Length: 558
Image (cartoon, rainbow, N blue to C red):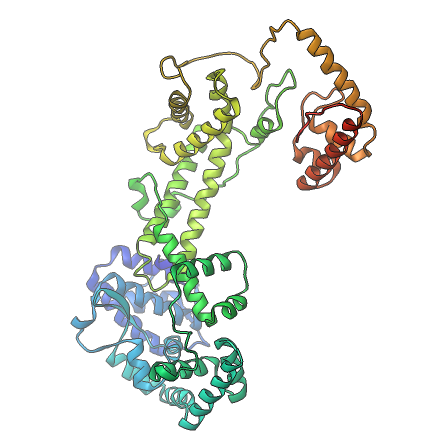
C-alpha cells in the first residue's frame, strides 16, 4: 500500500488523494514537478507543507497550515511519491520519450555498485517505476541522470574511485582467500578477514571474489558456494530463522553469506504467504474511500461476564468454568468483530496478490502478517465467546452412544468453520447460524440423530448430570466410595501444606462446592499456572505411592 512507506502522514495523504482522484495525465505532471523539486531540497532545511502541496499540485492546501516537513523526510517522501504515481500509470520503458536506465545500467556507467546508486537516490536521483517486459522496476530518465551528474560530479567521482580495485590488489585478495578457504574458513569469514586486512568494504571483497569465481569457473575460490540449495534446505533455513537460530550459525552450516541467508528466508516467506489461502466475506464498503476510518480499529477483548454459571450441584469441571471468562457478545459487538475480521483479510489478500511483482517485498510481507495476526486475534475472541454455545448444543443432543467430550471437540471444530463462513451482512445472529451448523454436524456423526433432531429443549440442569444408578448394588458402591474418600482424607495429611491445599482445591475436597482451575489455584498460592500443575502432580505421585503401600487404588488424575 502506498501510504505505509511514507515518513510524513501529510505526504502520505497527499499521495493517496492523487492516486484516487487525479487523472493519469495530471499525475504524470505532478511526477515531473516532484522530480524537479527533489534536486532543490536541502536536507538541513524545513519546508512548509502548503507550499510543497502548491508546487506539486498547483493547489494550495488549507489543511495543516502550520505544518513543516524536514528536508530529509521530504526527500524520502518525494521519492515514494514519484514511484507510486508513476506505478499507477503503468509506464512502459520502451515507450518512454528518452532512454530509461536501470540500476545495473547506472552501475556500469559510473563504475560503482548498485548499492551506491541506491544511496544516490536518497540524494535526489529520482526514479520512476516502468514495465521492463513483464516486470516492473525502477528506471531513470537519461536527462535526470545527466542533471544529477552535473550537480553531484564530485560525489560520483569519489564513489567511482573508491570502488575500483587494482589488479595487484585483486590478485592478493584471491590468493589470500584461496589460502583461508583451504584451511576451512567459510566465505563469510574469508570476506570479513580480508576486509580488515585490506581496509576495503566487505561488499567490495565479496563482489571481487564472486566476479573471479564467475570468470574462472575451473579455478574457483569457493567451488561449492554457487551450488543452488534444494527446496528442503530453503525450508529448513526459513524454519530455523523463525525459531530463533542465529544467522551466524546458518552461514557456517550452509556456506552462504548473511545477505544470501536473508534473501532465502524472504523468498521462502513470500512463497508461504502466496500459497496461504485467505478467505473472507466480501463487502462493497471495503473499497470505499476512507474505509479505514469507517471500519475503525476494534478491541479484541470483551468485558467480564455479568454472572457466574449455574452450578447448584458443584459438578461443573474446570474446563467448563473457564468458558465463562468472557461475556457473551451483543449483536452489535458480534457484527463489528466479523466486519473488522473480514476487512483485515481483504486488505491482506489485496497486498498478497501484488506481492510477486512488488519491490517492497519485506515491508509488504510484514504488513500482510500483521493484518492476518490481527484478524486471527479477533477470530480467537469470537471462538472463546461462543464456546458455551457448543456445550449447550452438545448437552441437548447428547446420546448414550456418543461420548460427551468427543461431541464437545467436534462441536468446537464446527464452530471454527462456522466463524470462517459466516456472512454477517445477512443480518442473522451468529449463534443461530452456528447452532444449526453444530446440529447438522451431530446429525452426521451420531447415529439416529439424522432421523429425530431435537429443535427445542428447556431445563436448568448443569452441563454434566449423573444419571440415576439403577443397579441393585448401588448402595454398596456408595458405601465403598465413602470409605475410600475417608481414607483419602487421612493420607492427604501426609503431604506438605501447599500440596494439600492445591489438591483439595483442584478436586473439590473437604466440602468445596466445585473444582478450581489451575489459574485460580495459582492466584491463591501466589505461583504461576505451570508451577501449580507441578505441585499438584508431585502431590498426586506421593498419594499414589502412599495408597499403594496400604492397598488402596486411587483414580485421581489432573
